[in-house]
Amino acid sequence: MLNGHGGNVKQICDKYGLNPDEIIDFSASINPLGCPSVVQKAVTEQFNDIRHYPDSQCTDLRKAIAEKIPCNVSNVIIGNGSNELFYLIPRALQPKKGVLLQPTFGEFKDAFSNSNIDVVDFINDDTDFPIINTNISRLKSVEESMVFLCNPNNPTGQLTRKEDIIELVNDNPNRLIVIDEAFMDFVEDDEKYSVMKDAPLMDNLIVVRSLTKFYGFPGLRLGYLVTNESIVNKLMRYKEPWTVNTIAQVAGMAAINDIEFAAKTRQYVSVEKTFLYDGLTMIKGIHPFQPTVNFILVRIEDDGITSSAVQNHLLKNNILIRNCSNFVGLDETYFRVAVKTREDNRMLLDALKIVMDDTPSKENIQKDNVPEFVTG
Image 1 (cartoon, rainbow, N blue to C red):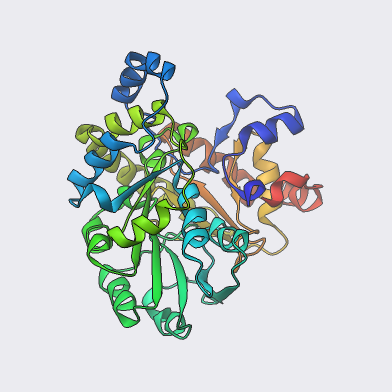
Image 2 (cartoon, rainbow, N blue to C red):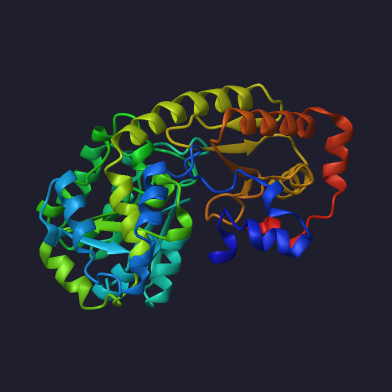
């Protein structure tokens, strides 16, 4: 799935001779405020700690996370990004089948395949992508399995209510539910949706979170999971040592204790996602989906224009969006944009309006040869 991710700015710029410093990256949904200053300060002050091996148990960070949930330290595992944990879980637990409600984050399927686990895809063919409670009966139809659910879902942004997830967990103890809450920190009223606090108390629930999207340092790679102690012990028998470096642990400790930054981020994203969504609704030929987090899925409704072509055309203006055609259940009529700063959001709206509104531009789009990278 690596070539299908957003955020591949260097790869694209190297291939097509572009300057990475001039690219406005709407393809990766990272905090528009960037990294907290306390993280930069902590990393600088503790940089000399790289002379020593990192704490392989991530003791301090696990303790800090456990205190915030709250749960026991023994319920927490730290990973080199949440992605390491997605691959670890099926490899260690070896379910009979993997179950996915598509479209969703592509790494889930790759994680199952990497462990030679057959996958059952349930395609959500409702173009409004309704909340998952309408599909719980389909998920229940596979008895002994591991279900990966993304909440809020990437790339559709749909939220699943907490009670619906708990219902699914309680329905069958032989069905392990893995919830990806990578974007949950951006969600308003997250207590209505998150099952983080429930995970340590249940026998078949794992919750995975990312620390890098909300705190703006994806280059450091840092994530964690929370589950009951029995599952933790099974996972740790398969987890490689030394995967989380010293600087990442320092950054994580500083970030999760910055309450002011978290509040400021939620307020900022709330305002900007409304601004961007309202602007997108005013552009002819596209349908943006109501956002719940810091990204917006958009469907193209103008015949003859594809997401690959739109991505290609916008890149000529140094704007990179996420072509969603490689998500299972989506096609060349979908793309996703991150919520960024007001200035960047205005630039996207202005450029996209020209692409979709002006007949000469639309004709050029339909004639453009689309380079290879836009398929990702």
